[in-house]
Image (cartoon, rainbow, N blue to C red; front, side):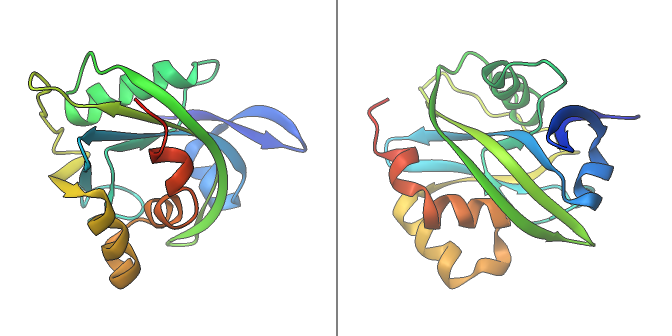
Length: 174
């Protein structure tokens, strides 16, 4: 199946096949979501079938919008697809840009809208095993420490978010 995502080609936003975007290291739109439970954050271990960074721990979910799909709708869609989470109220916290080697000759060069939502007692997590092999709730400060001490266990983007953008993502009131 061909998946087209919004990427910049010669400074124009263009629909480009997802794998090609990563092979060429094109700047493209993305969305990341953090799900919180007090000071704990939900992390997921990426399924081994993922085409990059398989088996690494990441934030609750990350994805690319479909062409003309608003960022908030993208975040809500992907929470449901990857983790079975519906109805979570999400707050936009930041927009960051990063570039990182994700292995296998692939580059993520993303302009990312970051959302945070607070889990409730009725928040159920039902991971899609083709996307997620494991989930865990981790104290946010402990997770930041773990990403520094054992970077090989975590996706590059999670390490970047916690190292460079933690204050802007997590200090606003939900």
